[in-house]
Image: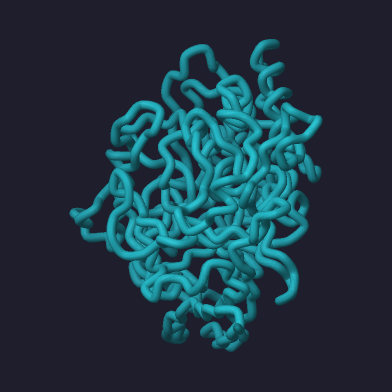
Length: 472
């Protein structure tokens, strides 16, 4: 029998260069943002470090207490450690799988950096995973898993358990020009699923590719008061500016209640503990107190009967250490924030409307016993809210209140160090954009007007905008 194949093409939006002027639609008298603001060179506030090396995203926040620094080190060791199939002589790290995508957190978040799609069609999808769902609501209003393969396609497995399938990737290209005649090219991914071990996927399956996000200052994002995020939300666009950011409401497993979503591409996790525990189960097959069962469906008998590394495999202490590590990660300082071209680009960033979603700065609240996170003015360039980015980036994947067109505004801090840390410059939720400029051109929906304005910018303005983003 031939293996089942599924072909999934991520759709195109219409990208057309606008008129011949480089002026924004709302141009006219407006305050200039080409000035240095107090504290912006230290985007993490007291949790800022001066490091431009490949380890820039891996440093602890300065002035951690000895106990916090010890917990950071323990969590870092867990983050970097390889896990092994049970039973294994390394009992503290056995329990991998039965199904998994990687053997460690570090394998996807290399040096705490950004994941990328495979460079060739035959390479494995290590730091890119495929979410699966079907229409309808799952438990607590979350996505409804695909009935045979669950909520994620697992491309690796332990001995004796078949992998769920294989993913290969090709690209469809489109091109256009800026108003000044300079050409641009975009590529849309096409996913081919093959060697499906348990028969075809549901005919109405929704597939959402996700690359690993960079881990820059997550503890600071967790410390932003909920009331601040709700204050910025404008779900009905009451002010008429075309921007309708709104919060996601997700289920907290630990507390058994609905809470504000902050983490994940669709803000589908309420806190760092649950984000970490969900990734351990989904990506490594490691159970925890929050997710104590393996990610096997009823159709996967060998998966259900595989050996376990314990119940749970990641105990409360290890989960706490992993959470302490991610919460204490620092933010690298800005580079060249006061240079004339960077300040010009900052003004362009505001003028074209990018700052309406990528909110430059915010204040953290009180975090008991964590002065490095408390009452800090930080500059993540995000509002942590959901925004409709249009059909070109839509995946059709509903995630609690997030629709298939909506994505959490990703923080931009650390953006300019992407190549240094991660070894590439791939951006967006599936890594389709090869450059920052490509990422901008993929924006639609609420960001359509800003993207169209960028198409009309002069070369000098575009260069300034990119210089500013590279300084973050």
